[in-house]
Length: 509
Image (cartoon, rainbow, N blue to C red; front, top):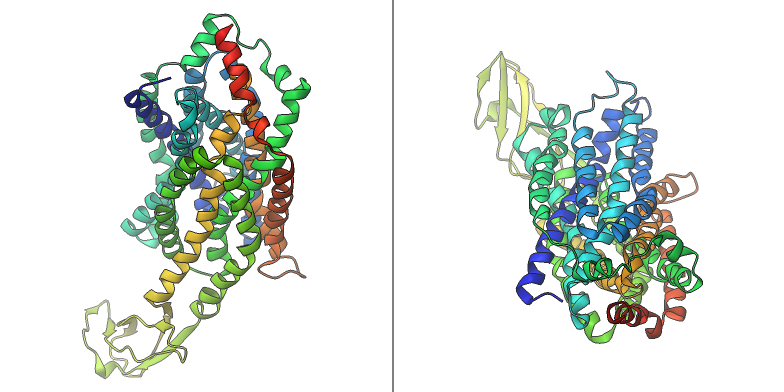
């Protein structure tokens, strides 16, 4: 095992690369609405958006194949060089997405986007298992949950950074410039981050457990065969999938990713406002990944993960209903005011037009939930003395904004419970020689297939004629419920100790 100083270097090197890969993976979803406008036919916006979500989901669906390909490579060649390769593949694909011409000038754009998205999914399928395994194999047995939980923060922080980058660029450019070319910048920026991460990872050393295993000639010659044809290992792979990772996957993508889609598409909020609220909630909740990883070393992984699933099952519909009631009905209203041009506060003459500004703020809602900005703007022709109509969108006051942020925080809190301990949970299930392959597959099926399909399936169900805005939530609730039952009944402490026993045998013999 590594010294305290050494383990933090390992965590830092692993986390930086993994964080950047998650950033690359999630900016596609964070910009799904504008991508649907740029790379798909514009005659049917709903179909274009669903096609974008399907393309987004395709990257998740191929993640298990990436787990098989790179997992096998990692168990034969080594952890370090395998997830160095995945980093390059991910960064290159992300950069190229930012270079593709729009559909209007390049009709093959949807297919090229799909191809690059598939490459992203393959790369991520090989990244997570390598990073988690690498950290766990440097950590002492009684602190695996704590140390691997730092890796768990990278997925949320990757989403957080993607949102921060998008918000910064949106605020730095006009709306027209962002829609025309500024949306490409988050994709292009990834190449700089990847180069930095490659430099860091090249200085990493191979896992000590894998190095010793390789030196003794005891690495697996066929990790795929050992993982999935040996009955005792296949049983654990299936239990990890159906008793832990598929539920964790739907909770992750419902609480963090579908929430964004819900606020934008269902509640009709603007992107900057939504992303800002998400960023605040993500930042507040992220420390709980560490807390629950640490706690899992004390009381066990299973209890924490199952409780997180149960809370999500119970509270998803009430929380999303509350989000809708706080935002949708009131946020989309408009107020029309009549302003007499003779009452101009600050006129400016340009091109035979007057820009009228007024400090009027005399609109209130009976429920006092809303406030109006303290000035309005309108453009009228010079010399036109007729009263002008000015439309203002009602905005929520600060107290209700913080209530919405609080609800998003609760949703992310569920994620920290199911996701914080799961890296250590998966690592402890499998012996060193097949660990990369064995843990990667159930993780990426659970997250990539069951979880990654959440935005698409939930949105698709919600827009059906007989559905309402909460109908789609039955998908993640149902998957989480099945996982909760299987995990509660069939995961035992004996199964969680299997890798410790086999690992000792590997090192002693």
